[in-house]
Image 1: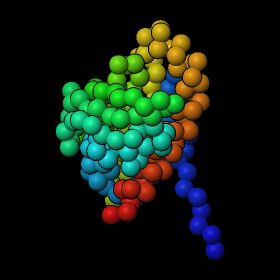
Image 2: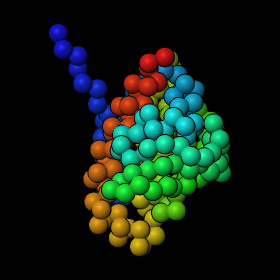
Image 3: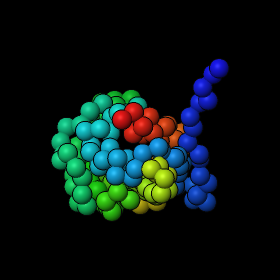
Length: 160
């Protein structure tokens, strides 16, 4: 008997610069949020395989928190992110110098499980960054990375 492959549901946002997916996690919102708001755990759930380590920041993020990450996408680099949206156990989003955002929305399903929606939002990126995102074919690639991140988040959150 084979186990069914876990997949996140791709969401059509109607905006080509916003790529989203959602998944149901068998864990309470507080447990899922505790993973998302700890930058030291982001490498565990990274579906893009670009995070290689956390270099700075608090153990728990809040609005305005800054955290640095070691990254690799063709080359090694470092990036500093800032939390720009925050509601404990419900919402967290961060951005870096390019101004695109990674946003996580958590909905308590009331039965010990949580629906998590992740979005990559490139609408805030200035013109030069839009050119770069399009040149790198970032939008189709990021759609897959968002879905893979949610599958990894589910596995990590449900492992407890």
